[in-house]
Length: 207
Image (tube, rainbow, N blue to C red):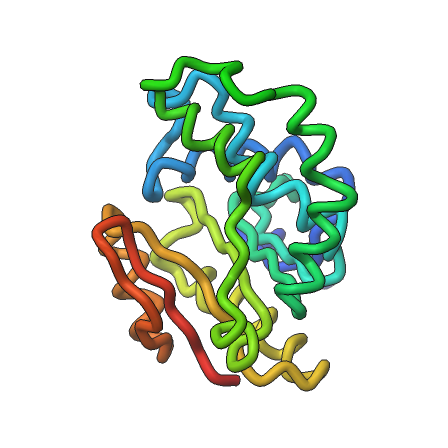
């Protein structure tokens, strides 16, 4: 009799609707420049509201996860092939309900949460020249147990392949100035600096 097939410690698969709670957890626990955002924010769930949940709703076919032997995600990549269209869809289908939940002035003005609430009401619109050359964008986050084993690269390559199949010529992302490790990782993959200020950099990769 053949021995039982071992369950891999980690594996990559498409994201599922049932992953929502686990992905929220990954987002929040990596939401402070790669570290746990819970000590910093009174409403850390806003991080998922801004940088995770709209992708699962509006672009679910460009979402993959790294999961453990229990099949619970410990990392993910999310993307939108057409940034301008995605921004329009968020404005119509995503931001209005959040703005009702968190109206302007609903959190202390001097709190870190105030910046998140401002993003709900004034979401970033990427510059036309960036979108023309790099139409897609992405977010990738990994818990410590998924870092250092090539899983971040594997997630990104899966997304890049899907974007290439759609004829997308380039992809961009933002990285915080406080997350030097992430920036080094992206630049090692070939991302180049498109814009930079004290808060961080916008990086682009031609596909």
